[in-house]
Image (cartoon, rainbow, N blue to C red; front, top):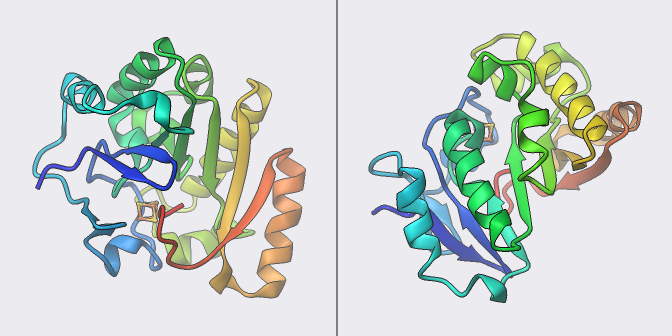
Length: 204
Ligand code: SF4
């Protein structure tokens, strides 16, 4: 099954990669094979052209927007993400990126937010914890606790470059941690969202 594009709710979702720099305890991939009836493990990493050909099969004007999400971390396919997002923006489609916020470390760059700003309208970043230690204990970034710091820097940069930026946590972290994360979100200048542990429309 090659499901690089799928519909869910009022949006069209783009599934670019199986790769991720984290291995979160609560990741939907640990529990399910897909979302909303679509199996999401990719047989191969699709090229940008392949994704665009799939998108062309849909009437894109019917959707609220396009969401880069899927079963892996979209910024692990950063160049393809930029290319497909640009293709969508050229067609007047709103774009959203759901991400773990580690793009700079994943790509070995320092300006991921700046590169995304021309083609991504909104970003939802998984904050998940109020400290690097707590984050690493449940998200297991391959970058260690640096992953958390990089994610916070990415959120600040997204806010700075004018991307509509939300950070989210899953509800299983407990009330005290939900409130601690709310304060982190405020300090970053980002919107804040608490989401159900296994949400039907996305892993972020
Ligand atoms: S929840 Fe997101 S960041 Fe965590 S392992 Fe799954 S795809 Fe990666």
